[in-house]
Image (cartoon, rainbow, N blue to C red):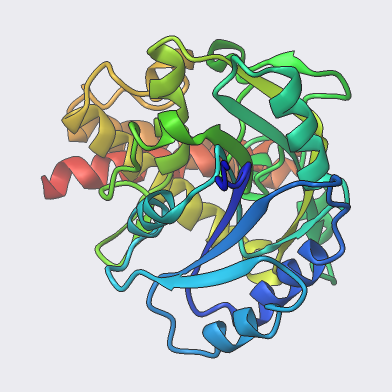
Length: 320
C-alpha cells in the first residue's frame, strides 16, 4: 500500500507566533478534497517565542507537525522543509498570509490536470493595515510598491509560466513537484538571514528549473491574502527593500553571472559598471525623485526605488 501523502504543505517561520496563528486558522477552514492524503509542516527557524505551542494547538484540526531548523536563514529553513517533505508535491506559503478556502483544492485540481508540470503558482492579494497612507494606496500598482506588497495576479485563466513575460510566482504562494524540488535546493546565500537580507531564493530555484526544461502553470484559484503592516507602508521601507534588492542583484551577478533570472528582462542595474558609475546613476535617480516629489507625480516612488537599487548595488561593490 502506498502511504506517501499527495501534498506536503510547508510554512517557514521565526518569531511570528501571532501571525502564524492567523494563517493556521485559515488553513483549518480550507475545503479539503475527499480522500486527500496531505501533511502540513511548519519549519521553526529558531524561534524564541511560543511558535511551537501555537502549532501544537492545531494538532486536532490539521495534519500538522513542527520541525526545528536551528541554522538561521530562510533558505536553510526551506531546505529543511524539503528534506522532511513526504508528499508528491510541495505547496509553499508564508506565515503572514490568510489562505483562501479553495487554496489547497485548486492546487490539487491543477496537479491532476497537468501531471507533466513541475511548478505552479497563484494569486497574492495585498491587504494593508489601517490607516493606509493615501500616497501608498495610490501607487500600489507600480514598482516598487507592487513588489513590496508581493502582488501577483495574472488573471482568471490558467496560463503557462514564462519568466520572459514576467509570469512567475513568488514565495507567498507557489508549489513544486517534490522530485524536482529535492534536486534544486535553495541557496543559503540568498533569502533573509542574520548575515544578509537578500531576496529571490525561491525565484532563483524556479528559474533554474524552467531553464532546465521544466514547465509550469499559473493557477488562479489558489489565492492568499498578504498582510502588509504599517511599517512596510513607509518611505524608509521602500528604500530598505530596494537597497536590499540592488545588493542582491550585485551579489548574484558577481557570483553567478549569466545563470539567474535577473538577466531575463534586463531591468536591474548593470553591475558590470564600476561602483563610481553606479553611485553616479544613484545620484541622478535621487535628483529625479526629488523633482518628481515637488511635482507630486505618482511615479516618484519608481525613482526612489531606482535610487536605492543602484545605491545597494554600488555599496556591495564597494564592500567586495
